[in-house]
Length: 477
Image 1 (cartoon, helix red, strand yellow):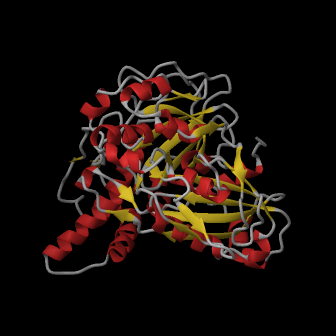
Image 2: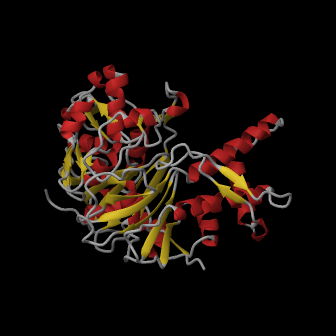
Image 3: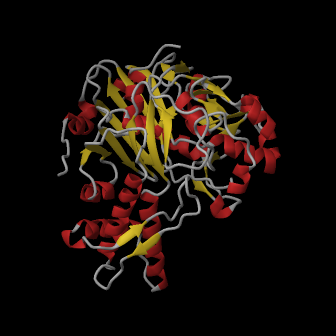
């Protein structure tokens, strides 16, 4: 049975602009398809105002479908619009800023020429920067990855990881690296810009997601990277997750200058931070991709080297020197999005134009109907998996009674959740998960996830909210 928590969180979201606040923090999430910010009251830890905007920032890649890059000025313009819409009576009381974003990806910029905040203006203009190369970027083939040294870390390297992308440029397009002298994730860039930093400051969470980073020593594999062709001057400074990176250089949409800004964090860690109430709780997060994760015990120490063969479960830094066990699937909401695009293309081929929004609305309604249950089996791995990049999708047990649009939609959704659940077995951990928490922002997961696992829907599973909580708990440098 699904329990939807209609708690004070929802009421405060609706009435936040009318609330008077004491001290609050700003949480920011730069996602793959949208940006979001929220103001959280420090004492109650409740959201008092929130803004979200789709970025529509994808740009064509010279590598076709193998590349995945986004327009940085467009993304940060959308973010600044969101922040500008927050109530000024609350932003003036912001005491800390927390930032998180899509893990693994990277961008480059030129120090001193990357941004400008004009006098008497809140808005930053973005100038000498590259595109943001996302976690979905597939330019690093298995052959290329195999040519790289084995990391001195328990985490393997994969296409879309920051260090892998930068090494690809060093070998295939070295002129790209000569144009710029700084690198980081797009959320590292945001922190650097807000604080006017000379060099980007990255949290352990983001550094681990880049690859070639030892989470025990908390240092880059500098010698290995230099041997492979990446100079260490492009590597950001790394601090503990939750530590301050700097202070707001100038006032920003009412937020006072000198407000502390914590080093940017991973969106996954921030999404699950409000939800992991115990070691018997696992969190399913379904957005563009999908993850199922749970907290390891405090005495867990990861191995010194990556596994000899890719594994479906990895261990990423969390907070306070603990780790999350993460089964990270490349197949989540993007599977449904691909299905919607296919249905739209079929409609065009039949002579009809149907907006994707209408298709989404209809398939979600059909898939949620009780009669949409069927024996159709969908293995939805159309995008492969990091531990099995050549894996393809498959549909089986087809009969004349289970190929309606609703039943196929239901089969796809069930397949996404079954796939991520099957990846999450951890042989080092005996504790069974009694509860599966699931953020409520994904509509098809809300409606259909309950048919596979005992899911509790929780509105607090939000990366912007989690980054605000991390800011409240942050440490002085």
